[in-house]
Amino acid sequence: MIELRVNGAARKFDGDGEMPLLWYLRDLLELTGTKYGCGLGLCGACTVHLNGAAVRSCQTTMKAAAGKTITTIEGLAHHPVQAAWERGNVPQCGYCQSGQIMQAVALLKERPKPTDKDIDDAMQGNICRCGTYQRIRAAIKVAAGVKA
Image (cartoon, rainbow, N blue to C red; front, side, top):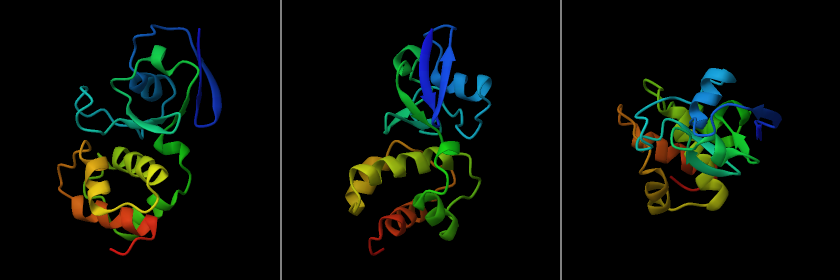
């Protein structure tokens, strides 16, 4: 039996420990804000927090999540990054945005006042097909209170 916490709630899973966390979140818990993108951990659409660190849930097994705390986009609840995203009208199609936001929140936890290089380095693994990278960077700066 695998025990973990998801968005503050205790959960149990008695299935295959090799199942990706992504499928547990989407299919079993119906937390569909976390998206399936490439399935290889390269695009960032499936980014969630595992004990506060940004991870690719398509590459994180249930066994690796055992005993850990998982936060999805649904668990953020009015984070300043989300407000900055809305104010900056960041999303275009929106598909990658939950992963982008989760990565940005993890960045600001580690570096509350990031430089452009910090932002670029942290966000480089999150792909946006619509190319909203400038708006993403601006929103991160707004959330951090850094001059854009």
